Length: 121
Ligand code: 5GP
Image 1 (cartoon, rainbow, N blue to C red):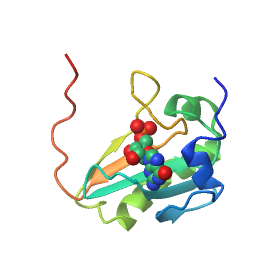
Image 2: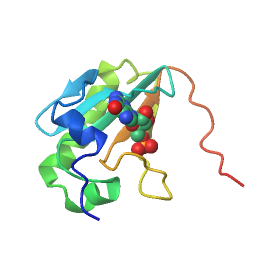
Image 3: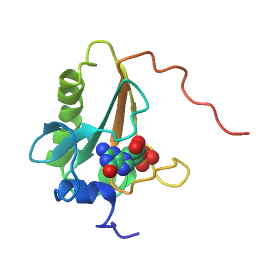
Image 4: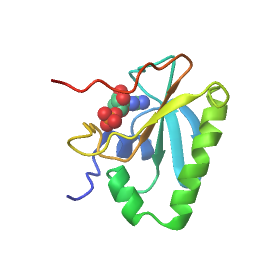
């Protein structure tokens, strides 16, 4: 499946939609989720056009992968959840129920996040 250049995060990266930026570098942008599911809810995305974690893991350059991984700790610190902890979630593909087809990791914290997941019947 080809990367959809009209997905909402592509528009954010192009500056067509505003965002509450937490962190930015050459390869990464992190911003507040528009519908936060916890007191702190930040999305971390690569600037490259990767539709999912699967796609990013397979195709991103070493520099992009290193920058993205290093950004997680920078973002958690800036968001005030580096010490208290957080849950990092990467919804991936159909079964992962990914809604926006641009790779992103959710960082959820600022409170106890609760048990892992409850699967539907
Ligand atoms: P997914 O289900 O794909 O893992 O999560 C997509 C996330 O993107 C959701 O948590 C949703 O609230 C967030 N989101 C969708 N549209 C926007 C937007 O325009 N701005 C921001 N900041 N977040 C968005």
